Image (tube, rainbow, N blue to C red):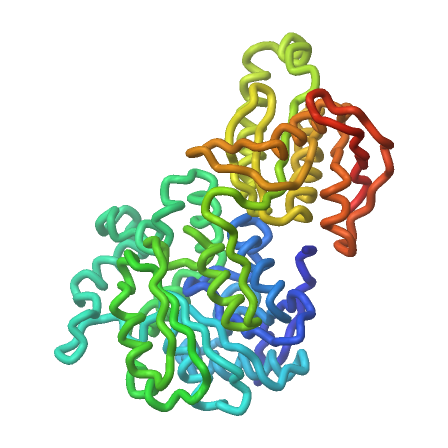
Length: 449
C-alpha cells in the first residue's frame, strides 16, 4: 500500500497533520501508538508500516498527530496542550475527512475514554490496546507505578542529563523490549523520538500523561469495547487492562502473549487479528502444522564472480548490507525468515501480494548494492518442521527460482490466480517442466505492483 499524502486540518489557528489510509466501509480513528512519535515516521519503520497496512485493510484508517507532536503545530503556550485539546484535534480531523462515526483505536486509555464519553454519537466502538487510565499508584490504585520509579524513568528521558536513570527503565526497554536489541530499530526509535516533540514540549507532555486519572469515566462508556493487553507488559501491566475491562459495561478483555506495549512490535499479527475480528467480524485461523503459505526463494546471481570482482572486503560489506535489506523488507511485508540458502533465502508469507511486493523490493534493493538477484514464488500448503518448512509447495518454489533469470521475479500460476485484482501485472513466460515436479507448470514474470 502506498503511503498516503499528509494533509492539514485547522483548529483555532493550529495545523493538525493527518493521513487517511485505505477506503473500507468502516472508519477507524487511530489515536496513536502511545508515544510522541509522528505518523510521518511510519514509512521508515517496517513493523509500524505493516501494522498500519493491516489496520487499513479493516477499514478507512484515519491517523493524526495531536497538537504538539510531529506534523502538527505546537501552541505558543504549552498550557494549551491537554487531553481535551487532543479530543478537539480528533473531531476536527474527522470533520475534515467527512467521518461522522468511527471505531476509536487507542493505546492511551484516557484519551479514548474522554472522546467516547464526550462524543458517544460519533463512537462506533472502542479498541484499547495495552492501555491505562492512571499510571501512578494511589491508595485505591495499588497496581500503578510507584512515584519514585516514574521519576527515575522521566529522568532517563532528560536530554540535558543523558545517561541518568536505570537502563532497565529506558523507554525502549519498557515499551518495545522485543526490539530493544535490534540496532536498526534502536537507531530509528532514537531519531524518531527526538523528532516527535521538542525537549520542552516532550517534558510537558510526559508530565501531562503521567498525571492523568480517568477512572471516573469508565462506567460512562456506552460503546462496545474490546480491551487487549499483552500478558507480560511491564508499564502498564496487564492488571491495568483488566481494571479497565472490569469497569466498562460489557467490555471484552483479551490477554495476549508478549511484553511489548507498542502495538507494532512483538506479535503484531495476533493483536491485529483480534482487532480485525472485532471490527469486521472475520478472522483467518490457519491450522497448527500444515498451513497455506506463499513461499519465496531468492538467489544472488553470479555471487562467485562478484566476490572476485569486488574483493573480500567489499564483498563482505555487500553481504552485510544484503542481510540488512532482507531483515528490513521481511519486517515491512510480514515475511517469516526460514533460512539462508547459501546465496539467498527462503521465507514464507501469509499473503501472496505481500510476498510479491517483498520480492520486488529485494530485487530493487539488491540493484542498489551493485548485485543482481532473482526470485521465485509459489503458493500451497507447507508443513512446519521445527523452524524449517517442507512439502511439495516448497520444492516447487525452489524450482521456480532456478528457472528465473537475473533480475527476474518469477511466479507460478497459483500465485497469479491468488492475487487477481490486487493491481499486480505479469508477463506470461509459458509452460515449463520443473525438475522433480510432475506435469507442466505455467510461469509468469512480475512486471509491476
